[in-house]
Length: 462
Ligand SMILES: [Zn+2]
Image (tube, rainbow, N blue to C red; front, side, top):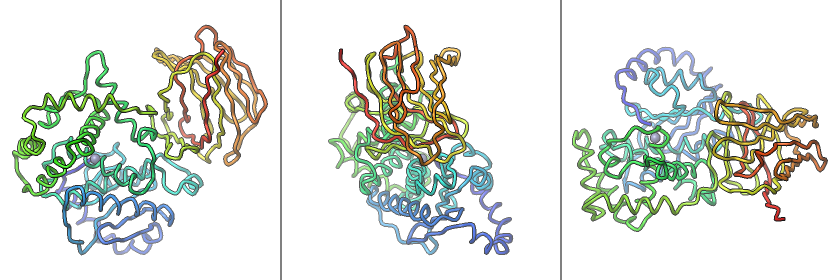
C-alpha cells in the first residue's frame, strides 16, 4: 500500500521534533534498532530476536527489489526507516500522524514522502508466544512487502505512477523471491499465505459470472468492482505469470524500462502498457488472457486460508493463530468420503484464549467443527445460512495447558464421529444424516493459537 501525504508529514515532523529530544532516552529503552546500509529497522519494543529476524527480512527485500528493477541505488546518509509496532494502538497512532486514518485498518503501509514503512506485529501474540515464534510468518511477509515498496521509491523514478497490478504485483513477487532465497518455504502452494492468491484467482475464473479482471483492465488500471483481496490476488498472479513464465526475460527487460522512465508523468499508465506490449511482443491482450487463464488453472493450491493465519511452511509443524475478534479458518483442498481418520498432535500457544478446532464435512452449506477447549471437547454442525451453530455434543476432557502437547484422533464413520485424546476415547458424536464427507480443515478460535504437528489424514476403504 502506498500513501501520499506531504502536508501531514511536514505538520507531524514539525510538531514532534521538539518532544523527541526529551523523550529520546526513554524511547531507546522501549525500542530495538538494527541499522544497515539502506534500512533502519525500528522495533518499537524490546526484543533482540524479533528485531534480528525483522531486519534480515527487510534487508533481503531491499536487495531483491533493486535486483528486480536492475537498479543501482547509492546508500543514503540516513537509512530508510522500517517500523515494527508491537500493538495496534502504536501503529494507529503513527498512521494517524502520517496519513490521518487512511490506512488505519490495513495494519501495514508505506509512506511516499518520508520513504518509511509501518507494520504492526500480527496476528496478535502474547509475549510468551512471540518468544517461541521469534517473528510470526504473517508479519515477516508484510515487512518484506512494505520494504519492497520503499525500495522501489528509491529505484524507480515513476514509483508514484505505477499502476496497481505492477506496484502490488512486484511487491508480492519480492516476498516470494526472499522466501525462496532464504529457504523459508518449500512449496508456495502448500503455504496458505501464498496459495491464497491462486484460490481466489481460480474462484474468480470459475464464478457463474466470471469476475477475474481482463489483462486489458489491469494494464489500463481500470478495475471492475471486486473485493480488495481479489484485486491483490489478480495483481499477484498476473505478475507471477509474467516474471516466471516463458517471457520472463522480456518481462525483466520491461521492468528495466519502467525503471528508466521519468517521474511525474500523467500518461504513465498508458506508456507503461505500451512498453509492456512492445517488450512482450504482443499486439493484443486477448491472447495473454488465455495464457494467464491456463496458468491459473494449472496451479494446485493446497490450502484455502479463508481467515488468517496458518503458517504451514514446515511440513510437520503448522502454526495457527487467530486475530482477537475473528476465528482463523484454513480449509484443505482435499475431498474425503464418509470414512476417514484425522490425527496428529496439538499444542496450545499461551494466547488469550484456548480453543482449536478440527474441521470436517466442509461443503457448500457449512461444516462440522470438533472443538478442543479447556476441559472439554464440543462438536458443532455449522450452517452458513443464518450463521447457525448446532451443538451435537459436549464431553469432558483433560484441561490441556499451553506447552503440553496432546495427541488427537477424529474418526469418521459417516453419521458417527469418535474423538480420542492421548489414546483414550473421550466421546462419540452423532452428526446424523448430514454425514461427514467433504473437505477438512483447521481452525483457531478468536484469540487462540497453537501448533498442529504431524497431522495425517487417511481415508478408510470398506
Ligand atoms: Zn502493497
